[in-house]
Length: 239
Image (cartoon, rainbow, N blue to C red; front, side):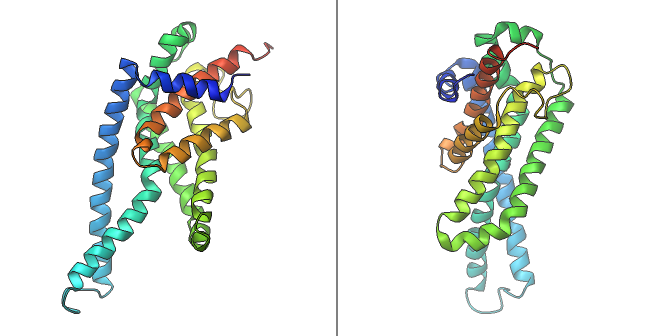
């Protein structure tokens, strides 16, 4: 079975390759642009909601400034929660390029037999992955709020939930190109075991929570998953 540490090391080294580096810079630019749009929209919506609930400029002197500051704080908290969703939606759109770059260099035979995913399929995959992440984080949000008093409970909860989601998404980015029997997205014949998938998801989810490192996390996760899928497939017993 392929080693997760080895696959992560190979993925990290490939971050400096021209093809992967260009994808990294491109995905960073798009992620920042989407993030700024979401941040601006979120601030205006929160400001409007607070004003509608009674915190208007005429309520008291400086009410507008207080409302703006409160909106900014709430927007920042919300954006911290949705950052990984935005980042993974963007990288899922570029996933095929990352996987192709890794396969061309390290697994040319697999690259030659891989399925080319049409743009419409890539968009659907990105939207579906973002939707799953949004719903899962929304479901655990009440418990996360209860755990705020623990200091680390909220972070650990979101880490575990997103680790499960990310492990599956990262595997399927690669497997969709290589699976020709329709079993992609199921556990039947999955090239990465549940434990390895979860461990990879934990690492990438933790990186997504660290400023600046979070730009690297999705691309590194996609590259590492590509190595892990192919290294595991090499050692899988033939049926």
